[in-house]
Amino acid sequence: MASAGVAPASGLTDANGSSAGVERLPDEMSDMKIRDDKEMETAVVDGNGTETGHIIVTTIGGKNGQPKQTISYMAERVVGHGSFGVVFQVSSL
Image 1 (cartoon, rainbow, N blue to C red):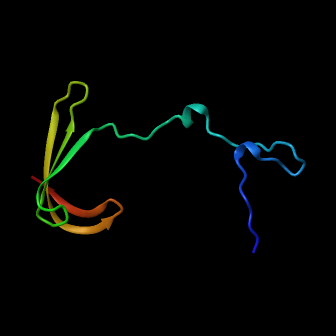
Image 2: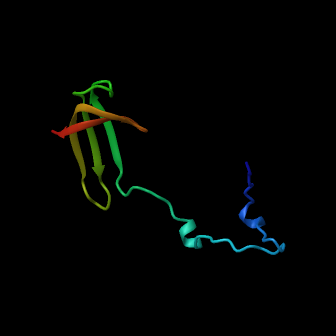
């Protein structure tokens, strides 16, 4: 079975020993960051966080002079387990 190494982009050369072309992102794209434009504060009000029936309260907003909004919902049943923990089906209160 064959294996191959990967050289850093700055040290790539072709078979003749000259620099090989490397596709790169434009500089303005390299500096981009992924972010959420909404700030959220979450608190579990009732329950231990892993059972159905607990109440979850989330506060969003408060940017650019907008008032904060509080959203409450109740976990009805477990629908799975994701990379961030238990996934619930919820209903708004």
